[in-house]
Length: 410
Image 1 (tube, rainbow, N blue to C red):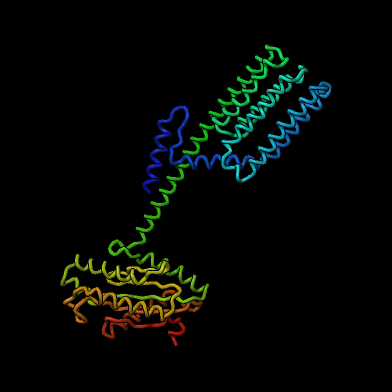
Image 2 (tube, helix red, strand yellow):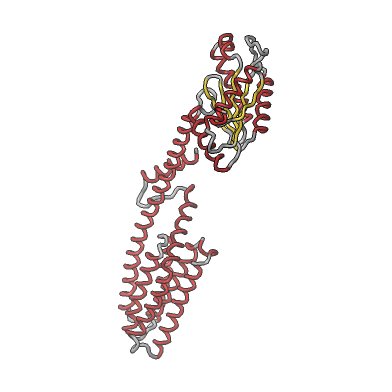
């Protein structure tokens, strides 16, 4: 919980005092990177067929509209460069779809992206046909746009790819292209690259803000759920003993009754009363009486140890333990154990006519719910068993089977 509060404060501080590029807190860097990788993987899975179609379209465009210029050395240059670029793109696509490479796209994509741009730039200066050279400049800029924007890479990855592609301009002085063409191409490349980086910067900043806001919302939702759970727990608990209260017991009894009826399983109950508790309060005072009830509740909780068992304060000095999936023999054993635990606690009770210490009486009831039985029948049986235990001299337990109305009438 403390870590969530610390993370929440860091996120709020980052959003409130952020500069032009919001910073991801160190504790969330791994989560942010994981989300970016998931977004990229989803992008590849959804749009990779279109990327292949784009490769084919670019190749077909050059072959259809510039077939008259694709002769001799220009044809060989065009064939080699397109094969290299398309081959690199397909290899990158296969790597992006492979689990081994999906986790570190930021490392290899800039090199793959930069290599394709470099091939395009270098081939531009090798064409003798001005039409092919100008077409290749446009294709290079398209690849630049796709690589930096459509692939949704980080600002740093996009910058690396552009710098790698920029290195290919070093072949310009050794080509037959004019200096004017080289400078014009370089200017267009830098201008398009600057726009792409600016858009990447805005998008990544927006993604970072959205990630932090989503994370903040998630933490706040967890906090609300936790508070709601704590409130529900407080509402269902007895403030003195910490056991469940009567309302929660009644709700749970209804649910367990229906479940036992569906599954045809046993449902047992212990009804517990502290013997001569009024005399205890009169002699020792109510604060000591409260302490006594708290100790008895602690011992009852030791008996009801299974997750499905429900120990509740039914009222005053009376308690109930609901035992789902428990037959009568198991309930009797738990009643015997509880009587022994209370005896071992040896809480002094000089006003008791039963023993020199606090004792309890336990009523044990059990049944297999069916359509003729009601859940109230189980409670009534436990109450009758408790009455019988008291009538027998207290400090022990008695047993009563739950019976249906027609059985009682008979």
